[in-house]
Length: 307
Image (cartoon, rainbow, N blue to C red; front, side, top):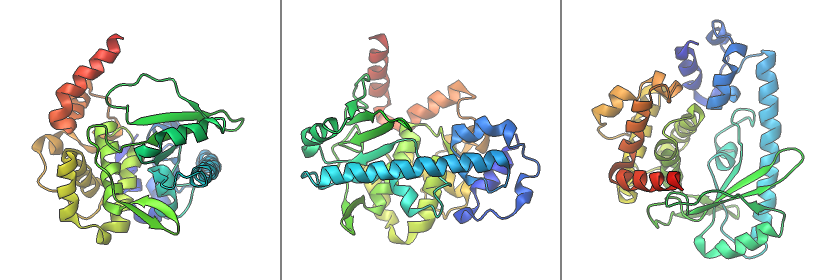
């Protein structure tokens, strides 16, 4: 597959992809696995049957998840849990994407202040949600995953009681039309942390989210304060790397600080397309992004592998 074509597709601003010449040398069906792995079917504006079907599936799925989010939010709000903040896809699909076919959601992520943890658990379990049986350790103790079986799609809700496992930092919450949202700086900080430190650049559509967020809200973000806050939370390697990659590959404005040569040399576009191709590079990048937390993270991770 010609990865340059994928770069051209994703670097198109606002998804106004009107030029079919981008696709003339791209075999859509043979590259379906790649598109699925990176969540980019919705970015392909090409009238091929495989694309049309996938985008229709995305739209139906997104409408379903949005309805489920609104139902859960209403249950929580009406029972005293006032702050229910949408994170990642469920937030971005309503703010960044003009067409719900363009960005797929596979679950629902929300932030709820930790004081509401017991109440939330009671309300969700009383409404047919069950806690996912998963190994808990230091890097995921700040969140709980709930699942509700459904004939159409199982509903997965990941509830975050903190945004970052390593700090008790409390994000700034804004209320717009009686709905709670992260401030623009806090939302971008979390998107960068999620893509870089948590998932080591595994999905291209998460990078596209960040690029669109920068394009949409760059004038509303105080970038000096953004970098100071990033340093305070100790995620500056993640945020700076994401800002650099969005500028270099997706054409956003330049808001990154001086970048480590390790990043500029090792994170190529090919690496972003095939992040697991080099296991050594993947491992080194994973631990570079965690900075001083890397040794303790690795130690704790190895402990749970033995159990």
